[in-house]
Amino acid sequence: MAETLEIGDPPIVVTLKKSARARRFSLRISNVDGAVSLTMPKRAALRDAAAFAQDHDGWLRKHLDKRPDQIVPAFGGSVLLDGVAAPITLGAGRGVRFDAGVFYVPGKAAQVPAKLRAFYKTLARDRLAEASERYAKLVGRSFSRITIRDTRSRWGSCTSDGHLMYSWRLVMAPRAVQEYVAAHEVCHLVEMNHSDAYWRQVAAIFPDYKAQRGWLKKHGAELHRFQF
Ligand SMILES: [Zn+2]
Image (cartoon, rainbow, N blue to C red):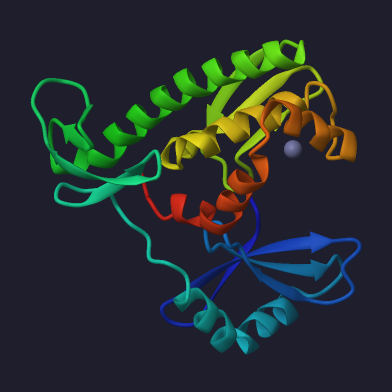
């Protein structure tokens, strides 16, 4: 467990990161999920870290207020699918159904987030596995397995032993963005870096990559507004 401290009222939770390289205190707000972290020199005193965070209480609140609000999916609200807001209504039967742009979720209101999360995970696995296979064929490589997770810092990853990982939140983004991330990770089966050669490989199988990459940079944080 990372060490944390709380400052102000209502409290802001600050995660402490001790670093051998840090020479001073620095605060950071994640633009993905708004998490606050304070990097501190390894030998610095905890109370100095707390005092530093306290001194920046106003700065933190100003920047946290500017962040988009979190959304808990509920009946009468909406969630994104393929880049489009889909209303959530009460459905019948057992499973979540998506029909003509509307989510039908059976059961109690309190279960809506968990049921939608399960739906997204399954859909993400199906789509990203299919896209990964398709792109892997194009680059003449194969991958070992696919994992679907809820990752904060990245949309996908690829290890040297061919293990692909994707965030299920990607299915909330437009289809072209989902395709781009699959193409991006699969190209790492060829080049395990972001060199010019790597980007040439991406362009060869996914020419429109710059636009989709731009979308993620600009709108990616919106996919993390939804709390499931
Ligand atoms: Zn990459």
